[in-house]
Amino acid sequence: MEIFNKPTINPDLAIALGFFDGLHLGHKKIIETLKSQAQKRNLKTAVITFSKNPANYFKNNAAPYIQTNLQKRKILKEFGIDYLYELDFSFFKELEADEYIEQILIKNFSPKVIVAGFNHTFGKNRKGSSDLLNELSKKYDYNCIIVPEEKFENQKVSSTNIRDEIKKGNLEKTAKFLNRPLTVAGRVIKGKQIARKLGYPTANIIWEKELIHLPYGVYLGFTVVDNEKYKSLISWGKKPTFESETNKEEEILEAHILNFNKDIYDRTIEVGFISKIREQKKFENVDCLKKQLDEDFRQISFFNV
Image (tube, rainbow, N blue to C red; front, side, top):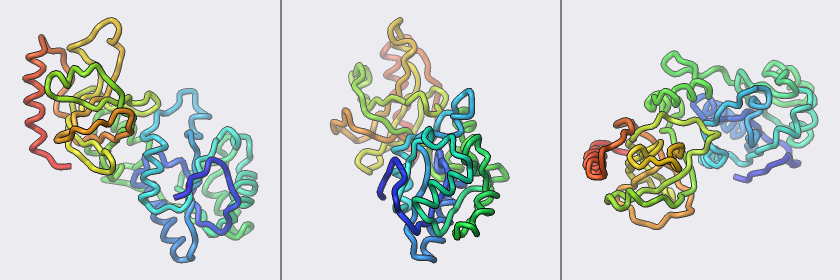
């Protein structure tokens, strides 16, 4: 998959439009429709999206993201997309909707197919809609396909609803909406190595503040290193047992990776969440913490990843 940060002359494509935060079941339906239409017409596929959520330009409070752009790229590559355009929305936000179609989509891509979700908006003040895409399809000679709303167990699948489920800690429903477990990607940083002294070394990463967060707690899950998946015990939150004035606001995601002893400092890994086993708590002493960790790790043998 080739990745671009600005439009290029790349004609006769099948393109999908949207921000695709989370790449959930509804987004998957759009991508599957795109690939199916492209295959019928022997066309290359492209996803036209933005590096930052356009909706946040029109809101006072920016919505947190479900995934990083790096994770989005990885999933789109797995879907088999040929080209990904991650554009800077600030350069296009003043274009009227019809101007955006003509000057960006038609001028650069001469698309044969445009696929979008039922609620896709675009152009200045988000005035463009699926109706306009349909209306202009004859003028610009492209086939317009609008994918209807996707539901799971009678609930709308949307990035907004998924964020709500993550905030509530509902990992099961989140995984169903995403069609995969919730994961967090980040660079491994050096910690104070307290867990190592207790016999449970961890890989520590920062859960970026612009992403939606789970409630604090201890979770069973997995860690992906070099495309290999390992069972993991994950702690997310603060360090109540070792809290001090200098670190009491510090948040950290720690993953003890089972049967793993490689040096991965400064490497980017992905940590996935399966289920929560307990809340974080402050222990009376290190021995009590060690005893609890021993019990936590006994639970790992009872689940698969």
